[in-house]
Amino acid sequence: MTSNVIGLFHDPESALTAAGQLKGAGFESLEIMSPVPIHGVEEVLGKKKSVIKNFTFMGALIGGISGFALAAGTAIAWPHPVGGRPIITMPPFLIITYELTILFGILATVLGFFISSRLPAFRNRVYVPESAVDKFVVTAPCDDAEHFKRAEAILNDAGAEQVREIGESDL
Amino acid sequence: MHRPMTTETFKLGYNDIHDDVVRSIVKTGPKYYIALATAGGVTLLCFFFPWSYQLYYGIGAAGMNHPGVWGTYLASFIFWIGLSHSGTLLSCVLHLTNSSWRKAMYRSAEAMTLFSLVVAATYVMVHVGRPWFIHWAVPYPNQMELWPNFRSPLLFDVMAIATYITGSTIFIYMGSIPDFAAVRDRTSGWRNTMYTLLSLGWRGTDKEWHRLHWAYTFLAVLIIPLAVSVHSIVSWDFAMSIVPSLHQTIFAPYFVVGAIYSGTAGIVTVMFVLRKTMGFEQYITKLHFDNLGKLLLVLSLIWTYINGVELFTAWYSGTSEEYEALGYKLFGYYAWLYWEMILFCAVAPMLMFSTRFRTSFVPMLILSIAINIGMYTERFLIVATSLSRQYLPDAWGTYVPSPVEISIMVGSFALFTTLFLIFVKIFPSVSMYEVKETMATPKMEPAAPAAGSPA
Image (cartoon, rainbow over all chains, first blue to last red; front, side):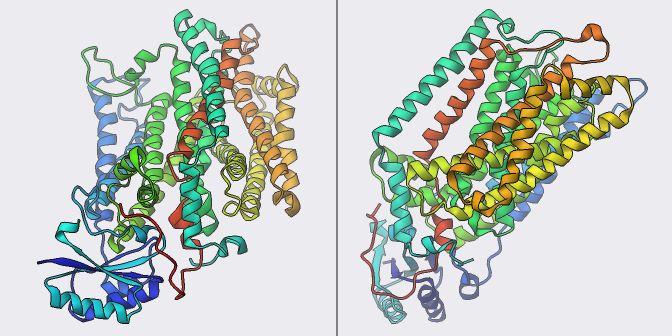
């Protein structure tokens, strides 16, 4: 049986303390749900690295190349000589390049955000509605009842207002 | 980060803001419906009806003719693009500089950006006369071998504005995901379904916050140069022509500053209305008006300076056609509009040197509307005065808008209002999680009863 232990806290500091103690006791895949971003999560749950910047960079790069290719390709396919000026005119084509760099950069950032944060979510996951209002919630999956009891004790010691259990079937 | 914005918000708890914002969405009084019906009616009558007439009759229904081939359609287009410049741009800059006073007002400011852009894009449709051929501006392979000219500023416009609309839509949506999730848990029925879909299953985990923070920051970094480029490109529509008084290098910064100026004034107007009608007195405070007032004052000084530069450049050019255009602008047919613009945009804003003025709501509202009237005039004058005095006297003439054009101009404001009224009932118009961030974090206290019903 797998279930999830849920501890509700009134303030972010005790939620962080509880998360640190759970981690110390060997619990894994801890999550902290909160109404606002909490500062200091990384010190407790480990450094986070996001791949979004790679998406942004690659998107911008591809956008820039395709923007220039679009304008320059057009100029070569339909040459329009104007008084001996170059066929590939840099200043106006750089503007197209600039705009498409930003457009693709934005779209790739959104894609990176969705992929790295696992959104949109298509299946039910552990969630406590109070965490969107004013509660700070620590959750961890537990393998069995004995495991759950240990987690419950740690959460209560850290000052949890409430400890709940959410099983697979409750999702 | 946890610094309270004002002493007023300091007293509020996380729960209070939640209740206030959800109430602003769910509870709708008769006044709202009356406002929506009025705005919608005026939009239909003054915007879509004359436009249909113009489509049926032809572009001749508008008063544009040689030499005034650009009229209020183009002036309004620049005005609306300009108005869009403050919301997202200001929000991005203030986000990157960590200004916490931004947080209570940025959502509505961004909505203003989005809807101004929608109105501006609609104006393009009105202006081109045959909107069913608008897709010809987009580069796509077709059997006519019709392909746009990438050296034309009008095509830069298409690229820049399409990117800007995409970017602003994504930016306002990304920032709202946590708030959609919070509203989702408090609503039922069709609203619940809508917010469930909009929130994408957001749970507010540490990982999601971390990803949102970075994605949002990257978007802000990308959108700032984009916004600057958009109005620069709009200015090149004019500056790249060889019409006296339009062919000036100062035009790009002139347009960008003018855009941010009129956009910030627009924010003041919208903030005043939101504050009064939605009961957000505790979140939108004197502090916001004070800060926006300082910003407006700086922008007004820069704007005045650039206007001076424009006059000086025309005089210093020493060419007879620039002299003629300059004299016509200052003392010709449209001169009274020019001096009205100077009064509203350069002289009246000096009042904001006084702190007492900046922190008074009604005077700020009146001034912000006056600035935007002045800025609309500016855009009209750019189009009207320059085209009326080009080179040889046989090409001179005047332009006066036709009733169709005036009606569509009035209708565009109603269109904007209608869109905004729909927005305030769908989006949480104050960013809940970011206002919560500016408040003191909860400390250990006797537990309050848990709020919210299980989803």
